[in-house]
Amino acid sequence: MKVIVVGAGGHGQVVADALLCAGERASLEPIGFVDDGIEAGVLVLGLPVFGPLASLPSLAHDAVVVAIGDNGRRREVCVQLEESGQRLVAAVHPSAIIARDVVIEPGAMICAAAVVNTGSRVGKGAIINTGATVDHHSTIGACAHIAPGVRMGGEVHIGPGSLVGVGAVILPRRIVGRGAIVGAGAVVTRDVADGTCVVGAPARPMIRKLQ
Image 1 (cartoon, rainbow, N blue to C red):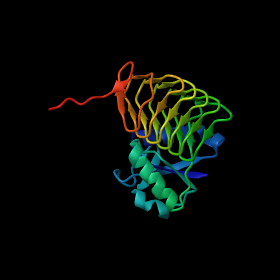
Image 2: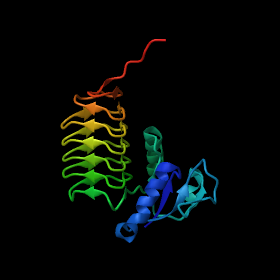
Image 3: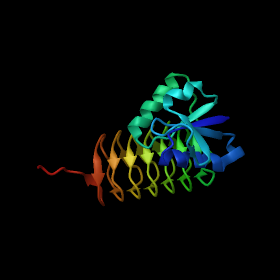
Image 4: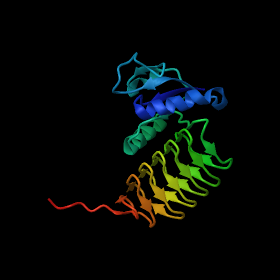
């Protein structure tokens, strides 16, 4: 199956590398990128940038992976492409350890050395980044991002569009709401409300100082 990676920046290159490393075992062959910010013809990881996103319908391919780091923008593009009939596929690095019953929805990305344990679900367009661990019966919402080195206990729920920052720890059975942000290195001991940004250990909502 020939796959085009949408986005040739840092995260796009990580995703393309995962597909290249998986090789024939995943039956997914990355053939190049589309990217609005990089000139057509440039080679990235030995693969061509074909042109902007708008050129995608004219390119021969079977599926796409939307490899855009920003959660909101990634969701917009996923929705746009699905509505236009594009097929989303998941990209999984071969060094990731994934339990046999884990559900990985289309467009999800699971990076090198990540661990996803039994009973868990990774939503459409979600990212489990390098070396992150998701313990048993956890749910990662659509287009959420679990950053490198995150440690999640069992039965954790991460809402759609949320960001869990580098090296954060989430204790078992905690809920991180829709569109929430957990700061790098934070330790989540209580549920995090929708749209809230928490930092520190234990994690507390960030309070902006008045000017």
